[in-house]
Length: 231
Ligand SMILES: [Zn+2]
Image 1 (cartoon, rainbow, N blue to C red):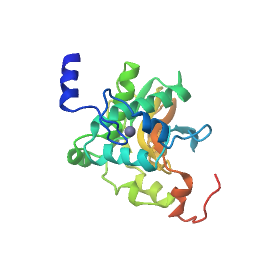
Image 2: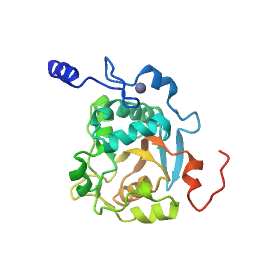
Image 3: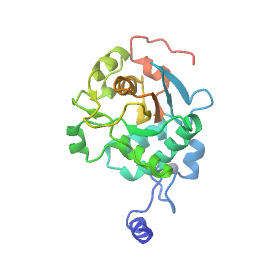
Image 4: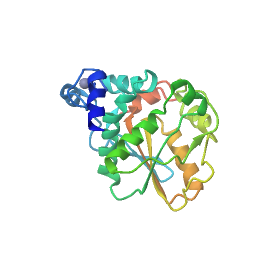
């Protein structure tokens, strides 16, 4: 396995997921480590409502945004490993001992066919690799709704995801304490809806982690509230 990994490294050298620089080892380059828009104390964990918290190590802007967009749209699935490690560190910091099951926000079957992979699943797999476990598929997306990224108003985003996710038959949710992994948290509508579906299926607790969160003033800028919020 190690030899195979070594050969793959030679064929496809590891790159920093944020700036694309070729690295000797998989990870995040030193420059990005110091320059990325890290969320600070008090910004990296917040309440989504409905007894669900979300944690994220980065703001969704600059190089963080570019890296995530590459992961999402440019088949840069190798980027999932270092990003998944960020997710794992963040989850370990806030939820250590609080969850016993890891799942992810799924894309629809149609999108999975087009893209070939599910970016949040890859992130969850990378995080789980560090924990010696595997993510469970506890949610399926039953409708290919318009992308949330095209909707700015919080109410429209909430309506767009309502009833879109279901627990697949046979998935064991009841009594579980579940961590949901996603790539970006904007208004939290998607994560909240996923959490509601899991809670309705009997989950004991649900918490969320994303690679990045959208800065609040940017979320609101195009929405109903055009005032810049003082954060
Ligand atoms: Zn970099």
